[in-house]
Length: 363
Image (cartoon, rainbow, N blue to C red; front, side):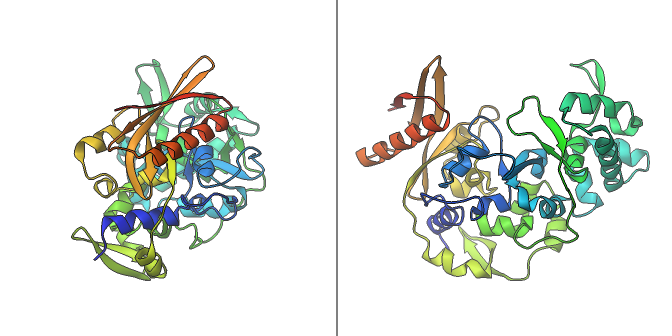
């Protein structure tokens, strides 16, 4: 039997949200990928884990479209192994990950993995120099037959389906330039996909190590993969624990860490921080109204993490040179906690190269 308090503290410790200093080499979340969505994306996720990101460059990290087609940051030294780890587990998995694009392919008798390889081959031929996404997509649409294409009413144009385009990029050995909007694709220098999946980068194991204990369904939901495939690849070196009556798995090597977890500290987590990506949302936030506030359909806020518990949400406010942080607490915050939140807001302002002009604690 494990209570949610232990689970939360285990994840804080596993994800290193309790440390003040760290390096890219020893930052665990880079094993599963750090989602880079919004202004407080991957860099801020690394910063709240003690990494100095002021000198971060593409010499050290690589940005790839991977899990759920979202851009994720990884260590550049791992890029070949990451490419092996993030690929679909099967043709059925590839079909699930590319969503509605699989239907016309199936009707045409084209396998999903074969389709991704075809798109990848074409993309690599197109991207011989840094290429804006729209340019690459437009050229790709002239090279592929109808099953790969869709008509876009808003654009009044025919495009390649979005998810095959994104998921084929890694297969093509293509990365995304940092800090480009719209995205710019370029070839990865010296790219070579690994022949086997490294245990450290294996996505199922990484989820259990960083977001465990978990069920196969929670991992499958995180990956957008079929439950059948995840179960077939479920690690053997796991133990079973019961969390709020639900049987979940944990890597056996992490049993002691789960039992001894007790973490302190305050962090302002970005909206897409890995800690908030866990698929057992009721474990993170048991109150339905608060969960709806934290995970709305559009416009996610960040979350305030204090001593292993989520205690509220936050949003940045910028107007000209004025930068404020609006905090919506879910409970009364003691003075010491408010000072710790304010200190985090000051770090966020410095991270954004602005000056914090105020912090608003809603009553």
